[in-house]
Image (cartoon, rainbow, N blue to C red; front, side):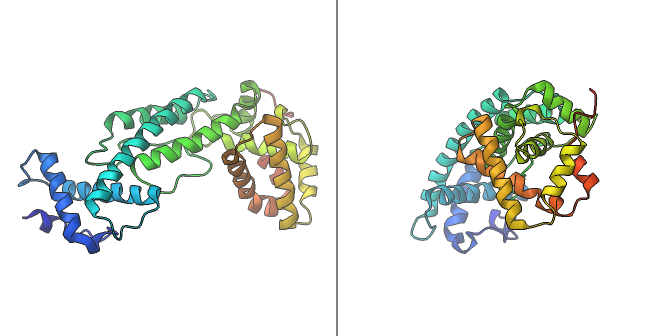
Amino acid sequence: MSLLKKIELVHTINLSQRQEELYPLLERQVKLYTMGDSSSLPAETAQGLLRSVCFCIETHLTFSGKSADGYPLVQLFEEGQRDVWRLTEEAKSLFDEAKRTDPSFGSIAYRGTLDEVEIFFRMYNLRFFSHAIPCMIDYPLCHPVPESLEGVRYIGEYLRRLILENRFCGCLTRQDAIRLLIVHHPEFRELVINLFEPIFACALGLALLNRDTATLRLDSTDCDRLYRLFRPWNEARARTWLREAVNRLCIRFRLWDTGMRCHLMDTAEDLFPRLKTTTREGYRGLFSIVSEHKM
């Protein structure tokens, strides 16, 4: 079976209307991959090579702002490969920062995911399979990375978001954070759950009450006050209060960058449905009462 026959069922490539340029690029990659012997290349491998070619082209178009029209695909591909290499180097730096900002709460999923990302950099084949993610990512983020991202673009974005979560958690003392996480779930270290969200929710509740956000201590009376604060529900007013509370957090913890501020605001706005519909008792779970529990 010819190479083109093996991949003729691939109809999801955005560049399929330029097959007269795309397939020669693929054939060149196949020869490099097989060192000149393409007669027994599995269809699945050929599809992977094709997807990698398109991934490089799409990556360059995304970061350069170019349109594919008017540029030879071979030029876009080669520039895309350089972009992928650059993104890989950037992701390695992000990985170092993620390790450096690790809040060390003892989550098995968190530790295992960092180990897997390290495997990614050892196994990542940016020359032939740049779209692939050769590792398992178990630790969930508060704001998941879109599944549409592939390869190092996925890993880089995952690490950026993880670092934002780490930086915020690092503003609190480890002892206070762990005390809250135990209240949130006593077995948090063994569970595949996000640890930033309950810490942020408690700090946000304190900021809404103009209390010291560094304590991570709320009681039943505090949660009742928060419940009454949002009653009756008014979305515009709630949005204003949340924005002001996020600003207080950023000032308190000296988090000045726009990326962090936007991340915290997005997280606060994600609480809208629960703030609107949760019962008075539900507010106590949402904001994690700490002072009435013991370690």
